[in-house]
Length: 59
Image (cartoon, rainbow, N blue to C red; front, top):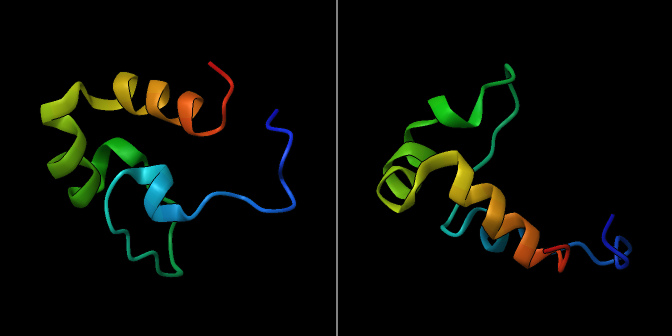
């Protein structure tokens, strides 16, 4: 667990691109069109997970 949860990173930093999140149904990341457009060419979900570990200083 990250040690700075009182000031979480910006969502655009987490996703690696500008994200516009709206209320509504839960969706799997791998089915989000913007996620696919950005991350599929960079290694998909596995690389996104590595990116998250770096951002949160966990890996």
